[in-house]
Structure formats: structure tokens, C-alpha cells
Length: 289
Image (cartoon, rainbow, N blue to C red; front, side, top):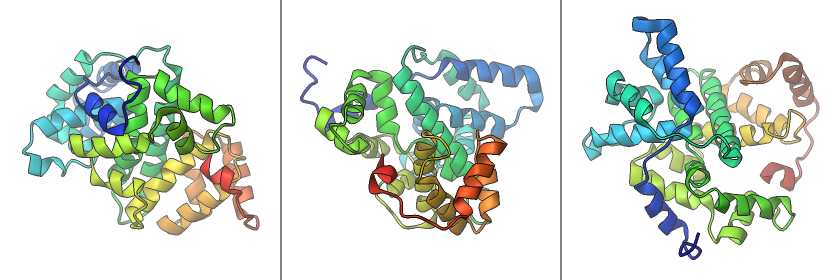
């Protein structure tokens, strides 16, 4: 980081803006498996689903799709399927096949992108419970809500690692405070700058800035829920998350919890039981951890 120690969010966003986006090696494997299994019957939705497991792949494809569209139309790409339609499957395959790969030993990136992917899957599942929401739009926003942090883990992992150490050593109580103390800026500030630089969906900005519209609230809730689930289904913030999801979607608590991806039946039953009990105040540190 010699010569970059003084950089803030603006400098890092400017640096990241022009980097070629790598992807996970397993994304290439997943593409090959899809094509081997489905052949000519492979749908645009199947290609789009690849992005929900790899936020860097989503960013790479969005950037390429935006190059092919007039700037005034690029903001219309708000879903993974929209990216596929803008690129076409031939260009999409080429982008995946020729992309550099993230080193498998980058464990910080792996954890960060796994949380982003889980947030996207939750947003997609909950969006499907509401008659008037676009699940793909919510999933894309949740997937890229922490794009700045994902990018830093990919290109300068020692920077977010410093913030993580600050948090784990108890010198900061919240992630944003740890980032500001260790790095001098919040990673969300990088995300906001990249949204404009890359013409990313504006819903991401609304999510970050606390917009109270239904789409932003549900996507933001999916991001928070994914973070809380990293602590296990006993995280004290999760029952309130489930109640809020039921309120926003109009679905039952049972349906909201059943829709959670990657959670076993026993864990879902335990979470439902905890959620149906009398609500207890959640300590602020549990909500913000």
C-alpha cells in the first residue's frame, strides 16, 4: 500500500473503476455444468442465476452491458435477466470464459461475497412473496449493496482486513466505525461512488441511504438478515427481521422463514418458534454488529 495509505473513498473508487473485474473460478465451472446439462434448452434465467452467486461476475457483466447501450438507457438494467438480455448469451459466455479469477486463498473475499450472495437469495425469495415486486431487481440491489467492500477484498485485501482486525480486537463496536478508524473512510462511500461511475441500479443507492420505499426497505432487510444469519439462527436480531419481512411482504411468518435459502428445516423451526414468542428489545450492538 506504499503511496496509497492516504487514499480515501474517492481515490479508491477512481482506482477500482478501471480495474478488470475478476470472477470466482467456480462461476466458470457452473457455466460449463449448466450447458452440459441443459444444452440448447438453457434459458436466460439460468444464465442470470449465475450472477447471484458471484457479485464480481455481476459487476463485470453490468459494466460490459452498459458499454453496449446509450448512457441514458444503461440505468434501465436493474435485474440479472436484464443484463443477460442486454449482452446476449454469446457475449456473456465470452465474458465469463475470459475473466481473470480470484485467488482461492483470499478467505476474506470468500466470506464477504458469500454474505452478498445470501442477501441476494433472501431478497429474491422474499420479493417472490409480494405480488407487486420484481424479485430480480431486489436481488441485484442486495447483491451489490456492499460492492465497495467486495471490490476492496478482491483488489486490496489488506485494507478490509485491517478494518476486520479493528472490529475483532474490540477497538470498534460497529463495522463502519472500524473501517473509518483503520482505513479513514467507510466502504459504503466507495459503493456510492461506484454506483455512479458504473451506472449501477439506483435502488442500491436508495437502500444504502435509508430510503423508506418498499423496495429499498425489503432489499436492505435482506442485507441485514444475511449479516445476522452469519451468527446462526439464534442471533437476537433475527426474530425482528422475520417480523419486518412478514410486514413488508404481507406473507405469514411461516412463509417468510420457509423462504430463507440455505437454512435447514430444524433451524427454520427454531427460528419460527423464537419469532412467534413475545418480541424482546434487541440490544443496539446486536443490531449493528
